[in-house]
Image 1 (cartoon, rainbow, N blue to C red):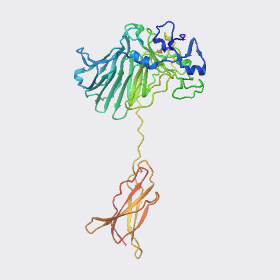
Image 2 (image 1 turned 90 degrees about the vertical axis):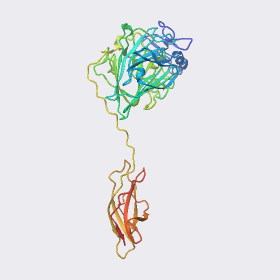
Image 3 (image 1 turned 120 degrees about the vertical axis):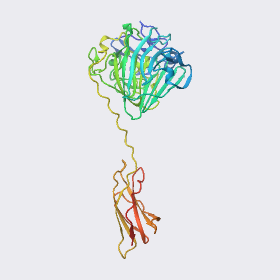
Image 4 (image 1 turned 120 degrees about the horizontal axis):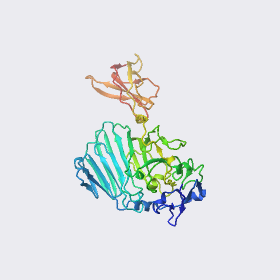
Amino acid sequence: MRSIRRTGRNRSDVSHVRPRPERLAGRVRQRMGAAFGVAVVGAALVTGIAHPAAAAKADGCAGGGFSLVNLATGSAVVSGTAAGSVPVESLGDRFRVQGRYLQFDVRAVDFALFDYAFTGAPNPLDMTGGRFTPVFASKVPDHRGLTLTSGVTVELGAGDLVIQRTGPGLSMKIQAKDCAAGGVFQMEPERADGQRTRFVHTLAQAADPALTPFYFDNPNFRAHLGEFLGDGCTSVVNGPPGQFCVKVTTRTNIGNDFSPAFVARDSAQVAERVNQPDCTTASPVSPAVKHCGGVSVWDVASGGRMGFVTGEDAVEVANPPTNCVQDCQAQNRVRGRLAVLGFPFPVPAGSKLTPRVGEAALSALTPAPAPAAVPTVAAPPRVRSAVPGKRGAPVTATVTWRTPSADGGSRVTGYQVRALRIGPHGKVVSVRTSSRLGARVRARTMPLERGVYRFQVRAINAVGNSPWSSRSKAVRAR
């Protein structure tokens, strides 16, 4: 692995690599260094170093901005700062999102993405070595027959992009920020049926083999597996775990054999990666990684997101993203207080995932769990009988009932009875309602004036009162 040293700029450098991007070499924040001293892992030295991440992020995005280009005509349909809806006919069946630092094509009917690449435009935080660097051949969602049919809603400005399109039962959104490193990219599916969407990511094949990206199991993370790292830790063994103290787990990254600064990873929110059973590292590791070298597969919840992060964000020891199913954002990590472990370059052959494409069958898309039932009021009880009181006793009538057919998901805690006095023409002329009765009560004798009555009963639970039951037969109180 690479040796790491401290610099006057408070950044980690690798001696044989250009100075600015090498901040990706393994580093742990100053307080962590104070707590643990210096940890040696193989030949890699992890030191306590601070880093002005916010300024670096701004530098990486300087001058960025997007245009939407009709590929058939080569003309920019939307550029600069814009907001509104664009007819899909103006963009074409497949259109390009062209930025200063990155570009990709979008298929209008399903918002599948193709030919995602970094342009290699000059920037102090460039990861590409100034070369056009392909990353993804495609990122394709399977909408299972649903299609997008609306115009394309577009928001452009300050290097940011949001495009969205809808169709019957389906919505897709793509968000991106045009940056040489550390930008934002995410795809967000939303289905009316609430079910998951399967995404298949296929890495690109470059004309120059050294620029062909590959997935690899990051050995820098393996070296710290199970340790707690971060500014909030007091112990690598016990943490304690928290926002700024995170337990290291395995990490699958994307790299290539050309640039020592290029690193990325898939980043998902409310999504699960689908294991690829015939793929793993070239050299066995435990726990094994069931992931192919050129393809990854994800099942994304409706309203979740399938993202992609680069640079320092890709090798930071951070907690998983919070669950979010609406307007999700990729930049929910806390910068400046978490450990960044970097990656070795060149990536060891044994850490690369192989084969590039698996042949074994994948598990089926699992249905989304049914949403938790929301309690409602109970169904109305069922009246069994209504009978007059005994002759010679005070004037009464008695009604009996059965429990409701359904409690609405909240147990019945009581009942109420009302007596409807019926006039000569069959209309209700007065109503008398009982106090609340207990949950076990199934009969009520009510003192009444002489006359004809019909009874109704309702059930009560924590949500409220059920509808009144259907009326009993008419009975003459006596």
